[in-house]
Length: 476
Image (tube, rainbow, N blue to C red; front, side):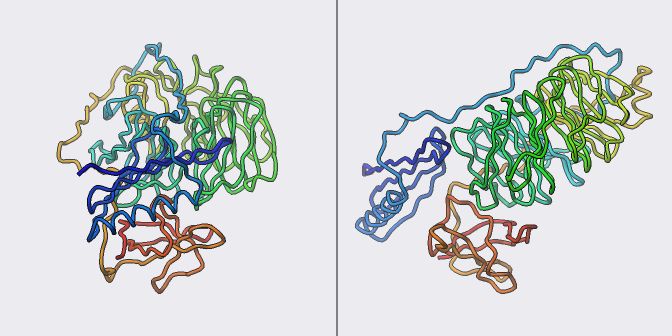
């Protein structure tokens, strides 16, 4: 039987929504497809006892969207959001020695996203693949996201992947889900997150701040464009762009300081008392978080694509456009320069005397950065790198296109309910043992007034809200 399809869009000028909603009735089945304009979207299908009830359910869904501002449209007429990729070149290294690479993993596409914690390494690439590996290089899991990964950011236990289509996915649960949606006119360059508050730096030099409910808090426009750096702590948001670094009060009440840097900022890092800006004029500069004063400059030989530090800034690392990696003492003294052997490092992180880098070749590279290993490398003795392969049996996770249902909550599950509150849909905990006044950070696209959901577990977060841990199922 041919389907009856209604297609709607909500696209607001000036940084608002940019979404579509499509409902198809085919006999007793109702299929809903929704998402960002220009993307494939997610799909949910429901069955009903009769054709009449299916059509009534579809009409109800369409009516709800129309009341929210959606309007009939023709699919494909509106363009997808703008996406800018960093223009990079990668020349062979001029270093006389190669870094002591322990292992490397080819992701298959150029990669920017990296996060390393005590348990595992995460790497995301422009094909939308996110892999997790052990510190020994063993591939543990793979995520397939609908769009290229801009960066990976961590907020305590939670790991988020910011993608080209404006969706920020929570990768911490059993299946990834969309935790934030960034306005369609924001050409995303970089992200940071702290206590559920997401900070977005963009092509135009803008800074957008979104809270844990996926709602806009405030925005600013810095003096320079191409903002490749955003870092946040409890005291400020540090925004790096073509004309330096600007610090803003975390509540958006004003600018705290601005410091011109030597060149345009291409990457940023932070420690407790300082931020580090890598620039296109071959330097990394350390700026005081309190005043913005330049405290030290670390001189490289070509454009700096990435930087990182050992805890407390004891060592400063940098990756340049000529496939070299540097290590400096805190005062700016260059300690060593080595070739990466795998292209230029676009992002990096240091942990436990190892330096992890993602490169223009799309590889995640683990370098032994201990003094003994580097000394041996400078003398020409390096280990043979292990080329890690992904096993066919590695589990692959994709964002759920349908929501599983249960008729009763399991004993260990937590029940939450979607309610109307001051004109907005909020999610509160129904199960005992939780503060019913707190909101739950919950995927906006599956919220439906009056609906109840079962979650494996909830964890309290600083700022007074709950985060999801585990699978989300609808309670029917």
